[in-house]
Amino acid sequence: MSCLQTIQDYGLRAVGIGERLLPRDNFTLCEQFTLIGSGMIWNIYFGLFALCMGFFLATALALGKASPRALLRIPAEWFIFLFRGSPLFIQFFFGYFLFLNLKSVSPFFDPFTAAWLGALVVLFCNTAAYSAEIFYGALLSIPKGDIEAADAYGMSGWGRFKRVIWPTMLRLAWPAYTNEAIFLFHATALVFFSGFPAWQQRGDALYYANYFADKTFNPFVPYPILALYFILLTLAVVGVFGLVNARLNRHLPQDKRRKIRLRPNLIR
Amino acid sequence: MFSFCTDPSTLPDWQWMACYLTTGKHMSIYYSVFTVLLLLAITAPTALAFGFGGASAARSDIAPLRWFGKSYIALVRGVPDIAIFLFFVIALDQGIEYLRHKLLCPDWSEPIRQGNDFVVCQAAKMPLGNAPQWVHESYGFAVAVLTFSIVFGAFAGNVLFGAMRAVPRAQLETAEAYGMSRRQTFWRVLVPQMWVYALPGLSNLWMVLIKSTPLLFLLGVEDIVYWARELGGTKTPRFTDYPHGDWRMWYFLALLVFYLAFTRVSEVVLARVMARLTRGQATAGGEAQRKATA
Image (cartoon, rainbow over all chains, first blue to last red; front, side, top):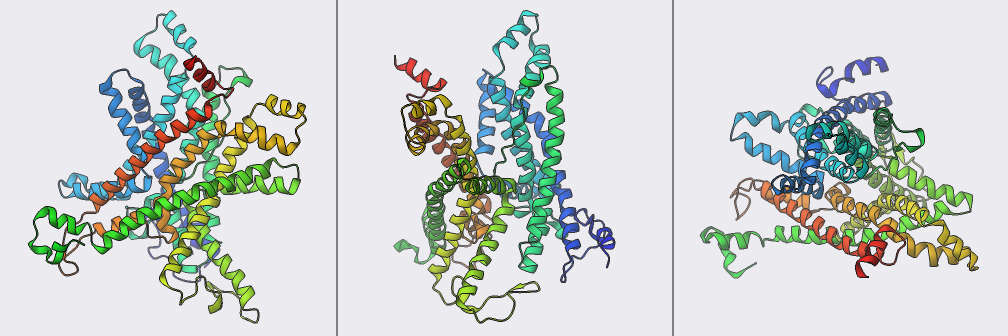
């Protein structure tokens, strides 16, 4: 079987297109590359959607935490503490069992027990909490002069938020937010390792890498392949976020722009 | 455990609960809480030592040592999260067995890697097949500690390397002006001052370390998550005196509370340590403390 044939058979297996059965023996390098790469579709899906939706909740939570009103502040503080203070691993387990129990209450919750939605909800809440903390920090470090200037121009309320506070907050938070995005993509590897079962062996990249490592007793091939894919993904994230960073800082002189410094973290 | 536990079916609710929570299996979950705490207690200083070594090596004047320190920090940090945990343990295990195999069975003629199988002689197995249970458990625990230390050591190394560079250059120049040697400057001026710059990063790392303990079971140690899944699962009268439905949610709720409480306590303690370290430092925080007392 040629490598092209393998890619045709297994390239989209993780989303259910192509060959149903996984290879059982005589694993070729091509099969490992193809299947682990096919699993990456899930990692990208989870990361992308959780990040895009989490962004809005994070902004809301950050504003809530900075709010002087206790009614807004306390729920936001608790949400952030809850999701930052507990391991993502436990959150996945917990989310799965919660949705499993809710399923018996109403058929509305049926899709939540599947990874594509349930895990996405957990990741969404998790990344929102982490990003909210970053945004909150940025909100507090907005230069006093900027807000005074906005006041002096007679801006207030929504207009001041949209034109001054929000862009400045994003600009200040962006380097840290880039790191958060990278961790989030790394954290997607936990989805099929905890709570959410992989239906018909359609798992993410780590699921397949682990499958190969288990079958061949040789960790030195699948895990480096996985690492390679993740490094490529990380580079892509850094590239995209770098473009946004340049756009956010376009009004500043070249040397005053905040550089994105990569500080890869570990497990959340 | 208690004397009234002989016939569970006749007990009132609270006594049933008391008996249920003190069964032999439940003792294992309490025991595994200690395992987790012990792992954290051993790993934190070990990782700090690894990190300190890595950071000092990365600052060294001797080029190979500097390359070693920098590449250790960069390599381990660059590879994504739990892949390291899955990879490290097998690699470490096979590495140890390979070395023992080379030492103990020199006249072994077959190749070690036969296709997909990793074959070493019986005497090289680690731990030996006939070793008692506690040897297996402590070997697994030691491997887990080493893995955690190597991984977190790289992160700590990065933090400490940054902190060492953050110490104001003027302080070191003053030390040199007083005629201190490089070694004296390092130990008497640089190291005592660097902690305040390192602490935010290190406390972050500590939080991450706490939250990575559920991954212990990947390293073959039976941890709290393992037991929560095991004990919370549906129990029927056929297999146990204490039948119950699916209680995993309650067990995970308990774990959630455990981790949240641990995080909160850590936050409070770290805030105190930070306040202590800031005292007398030439930073904004130290300045604020000086003004507050004056």
